[in-house]
Image (cartoon, rainbow, N blue to C red; front, top):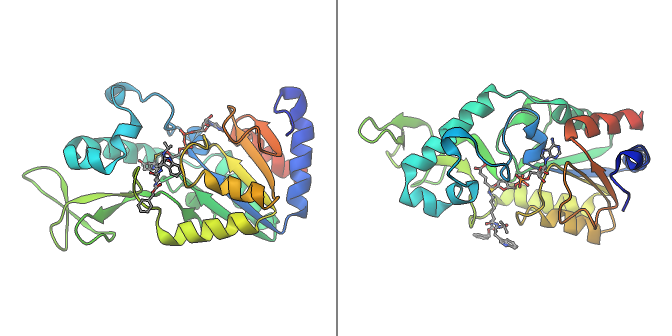
Amino acid sequence: MSSGSAAGWGESIAQAAEALRKARHVCVLTGAGISAESGIPTFRDALTGLWSKFSPQELATPEAFARDPETVWSWYEWRRELVRQAQPNAGHLALAELARRVPGLTLVTQNVDGLHQRAGSQGVLEYHGNILRDRCTVEQIVAERSEDTRTGLPRCAACGGLLRPDVVWFGEAIPAGPMTLAAAAAEDCDVFLSVGTSSLVYPAAGLAEVALRRRATVVEINLNETDLSPHADLVLAGPSGQMLPALLQAMS
Ligand code: BJW
């Protein structure tokens, strides 16, 4: 593993750029850190203001929704508004550009904000869903909403069932399509980039482990050390909005 210290960055970036230049298939896994520079709080950040007394681990569960759908919906409506106002940052844009520079790239995101797509990335695998979609809890399909004027909770326009955000909560299965395609990409890639994720939440965190077993070059970009850091081939310790554009520049 190469050091992520200021002195080590130049060398690590040069080595990562060299691996990317030679790569046939790059697999990228992003987490909340890549959207932090767009103003969207990460999960391990303390929530601010209104939400400071709640933890995301308590709100992003089917049990919390069953117990108190009003509070969970309020949290999601607040976050939806942040997402609607956010713009993709230099990190999102650099990954869209990277896909144009390498023969093959699979972008897997744990984020539910759609910022990669808005930055121009294609075929993004949304591992944990998308916060801007509603899903009917009865039909289990993405649904149009109609407001329930009595409770204020959103209802399915077709069947009247309670709607929920179309995201993956703790204890729920990852959607089959993204799960299968992401696993195949981690197996097949020759470079794996882990960007702005704490590498704590499975099965997403297991993708880097697959890539390591397959002897891909694993590059981590993160502000902080994670459980992956000691195992990664290269660690770029810094903000993804600076590290990813620097990587692109070093490739040219
Ligand atoms: C920067 C930066 C900057 C900041 N630049 N970096 C062992 C094996 C397998 C599973 C488990 C296991 N142990 C427990 C489990 C179960 C559980 C799990 O993993 N729990 C862990 C807490 C231990 N997993 C699940 O429950 C999953 N489902 C499952 O296992 O199903 C089994 C099943 C099979 C078949 C049938 C039924 C069930 C589901 C996990 C769902 C996670 N959902 C959430 C919420 C999504 C919806 C929403 O947004 O509200 O996903 S939780 C939350 O964590 C969210 C994220 O996508 C996910 C990952 O977080 P992420 O992205 O890593 O963010 P942070 O905040 O943790 O880290 C940010 C990082 O960025 C930090 O490292 C910073 O340093 C860094 N950073 N600014 C670069 N500018």
